[in-house]
Each structure stands twice: as C-alpha cells, then as structure tokens.
Amino acid sequence: MATERTALFMFFGGTGDLAYRKLYPSLFNLYKKGNLRTHFAVIGTSRQTLDDDKFRAAVKKSLADSGNRADSKEASDFISHFYYQAHDVTDQAHYSVLKDAAEKLDKKYKLQGNRIFYLSMAPQFFGTIAQDLKTQGLMSTNKDAFNRLVIEKPFGRDYDSAKQLNDALSKSFKEEQIFRIDHYLGKEMIQNIEALRFGNTLVESLWNNRYIDNIQVTLSEKLGVEERASYYDNSGALRDMVQNHIMQIVSLLAMEQPVAFTDTDIRAEKVKALRSLRVYNVADAATNFVRGQYGSINDQPDYRHEDNVPHDSTTETFVAGKLLFDNYRWSGTPFYVRTGKMLADKFTRVDVVFKKPLVDIFAFPQSQSTPLAANVLTIFVEPHAGFSLQLNAKTADAGFQTEPIKLDYMVDAAKSKETPEPYERLLHDVLKGDGTNFSSWPEVSYAWKFVDQIRRVWDLQEPQFPNYTPHSMGPAAAEELIQRDHREWIYRLNK
Image 1 (spheres, rainbow, N blue to C red):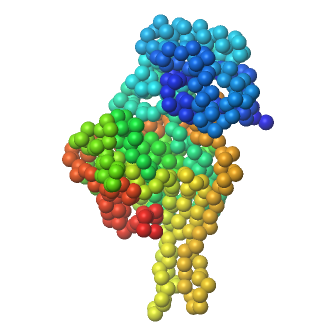
Image 2: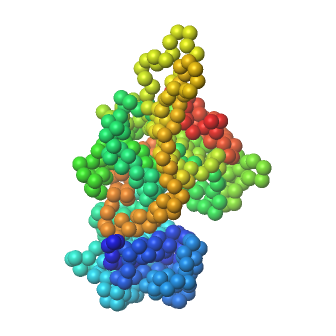
Image 3: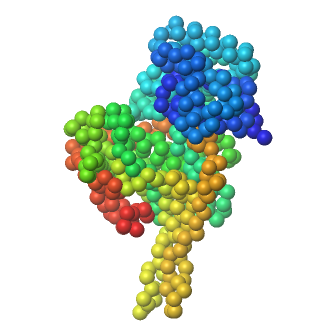
C-alpha cells in the first residue's frame, strides 16, 4: 500500500506549460496510487486573473490531454483540491493574501503545516520569491512540519550567477530544503545505473580503468529549437544540456560506491567524482570539446533562420567532448559525451566500451578470423528502456570464426506503461524529503566550473557555422574528436 503524504503545494508559474503538461498530471498519478488522498491542497499562482473554477477547468483539460479520464469521480475529487490566486511575485503585499489562503487550506485539509513551494518560472525571480516566502511569513513555523523549495533549471548561466542565486536562496532555505529538479534524474534507466553497478558484483568489479576503455554518453534530439528559440539562443547546448543533464549522468557513472543508499551518501560520492574531473586549460579545452550549429535541408531552415533567432547567432546546437577524471578508478579512461538538436533521431544512451583481450588468440597466422570486437554494455534510457551486452561467440560455420552477439533486456510495453513518469517520481521524492535524485549545490558548482572554461575558450573564437546537416549525428569534428584517440562512437548512422 502506498503511504499517504500530507502537504500544501504552492506552484509559482501555476498556469505555465510545464505545470499543465507535466506537474498536474504527475500529481494526479500520485493521487491515483494513494500517495496523495485527502490531506493535500494545491495553490496555483501567476499574473493571470482567474478564479478557482476556471483554474480547475484548465487542470481538468491538462489531465485529459495527458490521457486520463478527466470526467471520472476520481479526477473530480482530485481537482477539488486545487485553488488559484493571482500573484505578482515582486509585490510583497500579495504574499499576505497567499499566506491567508495557505493557512485556511492548512486547517481545511489538516496539512500539519507541511509546505512545498515549486518555482516554475523565470529564474531571475527565484531569489525574490525565496526571500519573501520567509519575510512575509509563508514558511511554516511548526517545528514538526517541513518547508521545501523546488526550482527548475536553469540554475544560473555560469558559476558566478549560480553562486549568487544559491546565496540568495540560502538566506531563506537550508541546503537540505532545496530541491533542484533535473527530470533526467527521474528517468527509469538513469536510476538503474546505481542498481546495475552496485547490485551486481560482475559489473562493479570490472567498473574501472583496468577493464573499461571508454564510456560514451549520447543525448540526441531529432527536433530543432521550436518555440524555445528565444530561451535557447541565450543558452545553447553546452549550458542547456551538458552542465546539468550530462554532468549528472556522468557523475553517476563515475562515482565510487556510497557507504549506504541514502541521499547524503550518494551526493557525497557524486561530489567527489566531480571534484576529480579535470578542468581544462585553454589549449586542452579547445582540443577536447567541439561545437556545431545545424544548417538547412529541404523545408527545414538553418538555425539562424528559425523564428526569434538572430541571423548572426553563434549559439551552438551541438556539443561533443572528452572528459577525464584524475582519480585512481578512472585515470586514463575517457568519457565521451555528445548532445545536439536536429540529429538523426531522439534517444538517450550510455555505451560502456570494455578493453579487448591483450592477446587475440584467434588471430593466429594464416587465420581468416576477423579481429575480436570490443565488449560493450549499452544502457538504453529512451525512447526504449533496457540493457544490451555485446559479447564475442563462435559462429555456426565450419572452421573457427568469431562474431559479436548481443544479450538484450528491454522493458516490455506493458511494464513500460506502468513505469512512473520522471516528474511523478521526483514529486514523490520531494514529498518524502528524499534528495537522492536532485542536484546539490556542490554538484552544480563543480559542473559550472568545468563548463565555464569551455565557454571562455569558445567566446574567444569565431565559429564556422552552420557545420552539420540536419538528421546527421553532428559535425565532422565530433568524429575527428574520438578518432584522434583511435576510437569510434558506438552509435553511428552507418551501422
């Protein structure tokens, strides 16, 4: 049986696309499973002028759009817990109205003072909201209650702005009360990295530079910037994908085994891994990271001719790079990463490439045997979830030839349908107060320090854009990056 959680949710940016498309349907899933029942309430806030009925109608539509039966009694009971309050986050007087609403709902639903503040809006308001939540008395003072702050990315645009933002939040909330949400950490197979590594002696005993040649992380997007062009052009692939999603995945792959499976122990090991990540000097940054911007094809315009993009934009839509860890486990084993828009397909995968045997005994003189292929463990994150292990085996032909074979496990359609969506998992973790799958400030800070150096080098150079064709796997420089080390990407279009 699911454990019922008690809390008041206050969504700043409560009429935004994310709230309607992801957050409210995820809360409904928690409601259907019994994690939320009678002792919860939701206040949505934004600048829009709405009443409770119009807000509830919009929530009902969001449930229907996400495939739920919005006309059921269960949905109606759930929606009855939603309330709306127009709010200007820069006007302190408005917080007193929110405070009165929160106290009334606390009594009505017996919420015990538990409060979750979810900031789903422009990050320049995060510090202001956090400060006013405290100074205007919206944070619960009940010693047995909790106050938790959830914030969406971007968490700064470089180390200095991220630190400034964190300092502002820290004046009102303790680190353990701040949940920096990264929806990739809510994905089933990203969470499976820990189970795969630390739940299997066979895997963890080989998870080091003695046996692993390299690790590759690919986050590929098929679409272009679409309606996010204005935001994206001020961000780019390096800040939008590498600093957060990719660095979080890499830290899970690189970390040491924690003392216990708790959020504090797991975060501590991730921080240690990121501390050992080599921050490149100018020359190494220029050599080990490449960028790209997509061109045009058929009716698809190049990036510079997308709506709301300047025609002289040097914002990258593709990044590939090599990461090196200066520690005992990973010294000499590179982590290759790549991400981009308008690539061949939409998928996320991790390829762990093991070293070949020191001696290929099958390649004896006069042998027609092909060289042994590397063993590769692939973690498929999306769109399909599962594992694949590539091994070498003998062919069924006469003579003695080897060929690579694959041992596959893919989550079937029925099981995949039951798998919680990332935001459902993460909202449930916030309710529990479990920070395992959220970024801590030290993780964010080390990631920014690494990324900032790449950005500084790129800002000194004038890129030759566009430099890759839509529906490819990026610019030629991404292939050259890995081929220079006598390696190749495991996922290639010609395979």
